[in-house]
Image 1 (cartoon, rainbow, N blue to C red):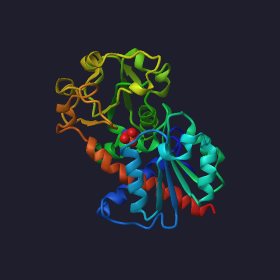
Image 2: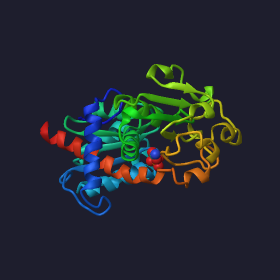
Image 3: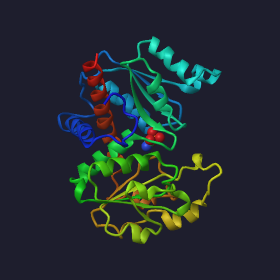
Amino acid sequence: LIHLLTTEGLPKRILTQILDQAAEYVENGELLNNKWQDLAGTSVFNLFFENSTRTRTTFELAAKRLSGDVSSLNIQASSTAKGETLLDTIHNLEAMGANLFVVRHSESGAAHLIAKHVKKGIAVVNAGDGRHAHPTQAMLDMFTIRHFKGDFTKLRVAIVGDVLHSRVARSQIHALSTLGCPEIRVIAPKTLLPTGIEQLGVHVYHDMAEGLKDVDVIAMLRLQNERMAGAFLPSTQEFFKYYGLTPEKLALAKPDAIVMHPGPMNRGVEIDSAVADGPQAVILPQVTFGIAVRMAVLAIVARNQKANK
Ligand code: CP
């Protein structure tokens, strides 16, 4: 693993390596207090050209736990606002000794573009690009599923909501499929599904009652209003009526099903507060596990960087 840009095409061996290393951080000490040395001497630059609470903060915490030198650029206050190009910004940060870039961007492919143009030996981790991919979110979701449910090969997973605009859904589907999940369902209105989604091996449902029946894991998605320009925009009341996860709809899944959400949540739009704050929700553990998974990704990438020097 030189860069982490997507879960698509990543072999099971690498996905499992990330999960196992994250598990070590969780099990071998106080995740929120301990310090490790994996990134000692490594300069990590967090470049978030799009808003974030969870990903940006947990990447920063992860780098600090691993003793890395981390700088989080305030893009609004940076020279990007004066018109500096993405690649000029990158090359200037390289000149400051950057070893690793963590990049979020509203344009699909931005992290790939940077990875193509960075100096040899500098790594790029995609923290979400447009509708395309959000690999560390998918990996923390995989970690959460494995933690609460164990073996992927026995699970029925439903991904629910705005699949069309979701980089999370795409990355989850690739990871689940590589890890051997035998039944991945997507539940969404036709207008919020990308054409050809079935080619990824998922089962498509438009009805929550059918799609949620007997599932082990429900992965909710945010209705992504910021990406809806020109697209069908359902009223929030209408969306909630048909696709919002309420206690009644949750009761159709297995009694011990877990409910995930990547955040930020639109309460009362895709998820009812009674579910979001209820006993089956694992939404806050997802956030905590995100630190361990991002630590694992940074540590593995940095280790490979050193090995390839
Ligand atoms: N899930 C996620 O990416 O959240 P943020 O946008 O807050 O980082």
